[in-house]
Amino acid sequence: MNKKQLFIFILIFALGIFLRIYDLSNVPPGVNRDEASIGYTAYSLLQTGKDEYGIKYPLSFQSFGDWKLPLYIYTVVPFVKIFGLSEIAVRLPSVIFGVSSIILTFFLVKILFRNTVLALFSMLLIAISPWHLHLSRVESESNMAAFLILLSAILLLKSKKPKEWLIIPSFMGFALTYYTYAGNYIFTTLLTVGIFILYKKQLLNNRFFYFGGFLFLALFLFISYQTVFSANKTKLSGISIFGDPSIVHEKIELPRADHKDVNLFSKIFHNKIVFAAERFAGNYLNSYSPEFLFIKGGGNHAHNISNFGNMYLIEAPFFFLGLVWLLFFRKKTESKLILFWLLIAPIAAAITKDAPHTNRMFSVFPALAIVTGLGLYHALVFLKRAKVIRYASVLVVFAYLINIGIYLDRYYVHFPTNEAEHWGIAYKELTGVLNEDRYKSKKVIFAKPEYSHYIFLLFYSAYDPKTYQETAKRYPPTQDKFVNVMGYDRFEFREIDWSKDLIEKNILLIDFSEDIPPLVKIKKYSTSEIKLPNGKSMLTIVETK
Image 1 (cartoon, rainbow, N blue to C red):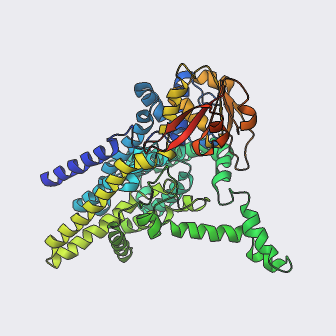
Image 2 (cartoon, helix red, strand yellow; image 1 turned 90 degrees about the horizontal axis):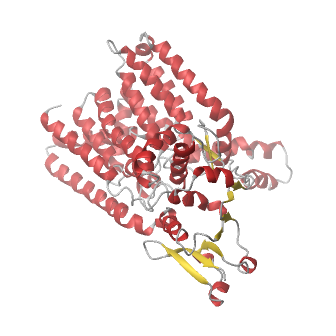
Image 3 (cartoon, one colour; image 1 turned 135 degrees about the vertical axis):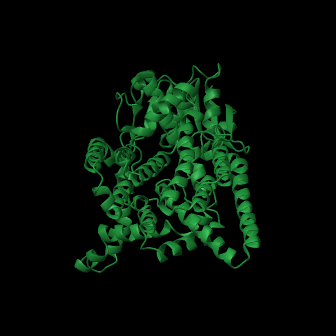
C-alpha cells in the first residue's frame, strides 16, 4: 500500500467512525425494546450478579419470554460501569464492532483478491452502507457476530507456515458466534463447512487443525446445551414460519376443506412440509429482491428507516455486475467463497415468519459490499479502457453523493423526528415525569402490557435490580411463548377498565393518547401528555381525583 492508498484508507476509516459515532445518544431517538432489555440486564448483572429473573450469571438470558445469547450482554457490562445505564453504554460496543469490520473487510479482500484498490472500494462501501451503518449505531448481536466471522475468516486464511497456530483463535472466533446471535447456528455452521471444503488441503496440512477443531466443537456443544437444546426452543417456536398459531388453520386446514373430500390428494398438496417449503422459497428469494435491497428495506422499525432500501439505488447495477464477474470466474476459490457466502446468508432469516429481515440477514456482510465493490471496480476498469473514465467517474461519484446525501438527511434529521414513536424517547420523558414529586408516590396502571412498557421504565430510571427481582410478577406465556410483565413495585401493567379505574382515588392511568376515552375530557380529569419530537402526543397520564 503506497502513501496515497494509506491516506485514502485512513480517510475511509475516519469517515466510518464519524458516521457511526455522531450524535449516538439521540439517533436513533431513545433505545428500542431489545436495547432496553440488554442494557438493563447488563446493569442488573453489574449490581447483583443476576439477570432480571434472578438467575446468577446465566449463559442464556430470558427476556420477554424469548432468550438472548450471552456474549453481547456481558460485553455491555463494563460500558454500563463506565457510562452508566444509557444509550451510549448499550450502543458503543456495536459501534466498535462495526468500525472494526470496516478495517477487517479491507484485509479480507486484500488476502482473497490481492488487489488494494478493490479492497479500498469494498472498505468504503461498508463504511457508507445504510444497512451496516444503522446496525452499527444500535445494539446489534448480529453485528458482533459478523465482526467475529470476519476476524475468524482472516485468521484462518493467514494460518499458513510459519503462522499455522492462527487457526486456533480462528476456530475459537467462529465458535464464539454461537454465543452471540441465534442466526449464526445456521450461518456459521454452513460457512465453516463451506470453508473446509474449499480450503481442505490447507486445513488438513495444518498441524494445529485437530486441536483447533476440538476447541471449536467443545465450545459449540457447551453453549448448544444451554440454548438450542433448551432455552432457545422457545425463541424459535415464536419466530419460526409456524410461529403464528393461526397459520396451520389458514394455510393448511382451510385449503383442505375446499376439496369435496379430505383425501390423500388434498393432504399431499396441503400440509406443513409443502407450506414450509413454499414459504421458505418465497422468503429466500425476497431477501435479494429489489424492494428489500434498494427500495423499501425490511419492515422492522428497529432495523430500518421507513421507505429506504438497505443499499443505495446507485449500487444496483454494480451489485449485478459483481455477481456476473464472480460467476464468470467461479472456478477461482475466492469467487466460490464469496458466492457461497451470499448463497447461505438469507437461510437463517428465511425460516422465520417475518422474512426478509434486515437484522437476521446481516451475516451477508461483508460479502455484499465485496460483490458490489467488484462490480464497481471492473466497471471502472472497462470504462478506463474505453477512454471515458474521467466522465464516468464524475457521474458515479455524483450519483453516489446524491444517494448518500438523501440517506444522511433522512437518517440524521427526519428519522429521529418522524419515527420516534418506534423508539424509547417518549418513555425517557415519561420516566422523568413519573419521578416528579407530584407523581412519584402514586400507584401507576399502564395499559397494553404486550408493548413491554416496563423495560423502558426500568432502563430510564435505572431501577434497583434487586428490588425488581423481588417484586416482579408476570403473566402466563402467550401462544407465541412470550411472557409479559404484570407489575412490580407501584407499577401495574394491564388493560384499563376506565369506568372502574377512574373511580379509584389518587392513582395514575397511562395509555396511548389515541386510546384515551372521551369520558376523561368530559369530566375534566387532570392529564399530562408525553409528546414526540414531531409534536404528536404518544402517551397520556390521567390522574384520578
